[in-house]
Length: 326
Ligand code: ASN
Ligand code: ZN
Image 1 (cartoon, rainbow, N blue to C red):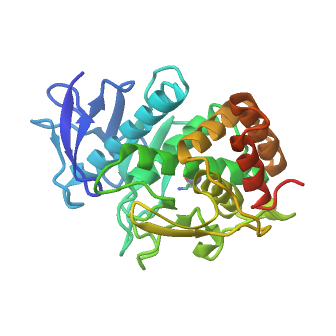
Image 2 (cartoon, protein in one colour):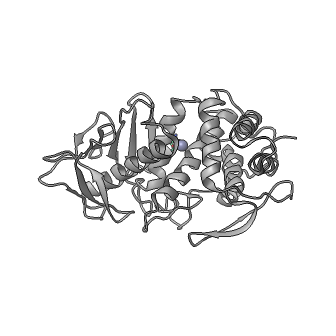
Image 3 (cartoon, protein in one colour):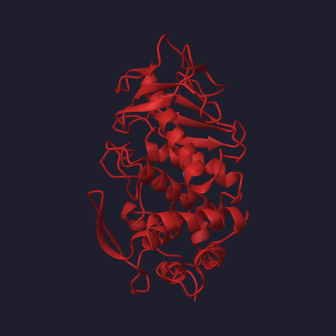
């Protein structure tokens, strides 16, 4: 296994997998490759390659930089699912996906595609920066994991749970990476300034801070955009991890209310992520809704910790805090 140096835009100087003489190919992680679309919108463009194993210079003007960020994010996400959840790759078969950067012209999005089994990143436009931060990469790669496990349909309540799964593991990967330039947080896309006003794309402690996401379940939430109906599950994950009320984590201030006004005592994000992953992979199916997510996560908490445990109670309390359940 050969490693190179990535000079990223968002995460400083990092190690990225690099195959000898020299391509951006991560031989230690299923041969995950990173390609330069160079503004194209189809195919793979060209595999990043060069005279040495140093990728990018930290500026977006250097076309390798986005490649370094994307490769780093994919590597961190691979490591997280393997080391924390024992899943080797998106399908659990040890086979890497691939990443494509510099998609299109002024494209302000990133996406996972089941058909190419790949992730794609735009360069942003105006104030919106390249969409290659750790959390965005982890969000997109997690769509691949969801697609190959529960298969949550990308509309209605299952679509909101699909989106929340990507936000939950985006936060988990960012925390686990512990990169000093991009410490973990319960915000999504805080580095890319997608709105141009310095605010993140989403907030997990109180999703309605973005102006559109919902803090709590209501009948009819299945009719809104999946990036907003994810709110109650993101909020559940925050409450279960950190508990309700005000808290500062890695220098970021949060203040998480509950819809029932009752307190939730957090159990830590590692246990919360373990519960969500096990529910995703053993309880959820393509049409799981919020009620089913509650039932599934409670069943998992019972299996892992027992039905009289603090963990089980916290799962129930956190769902009650987002208006799911009795
Ligand atoms: N970036 C978006 C997402 O991953 C793309 C989409 O709407 N599916 O959610
Ligand atoms: Zn998504």
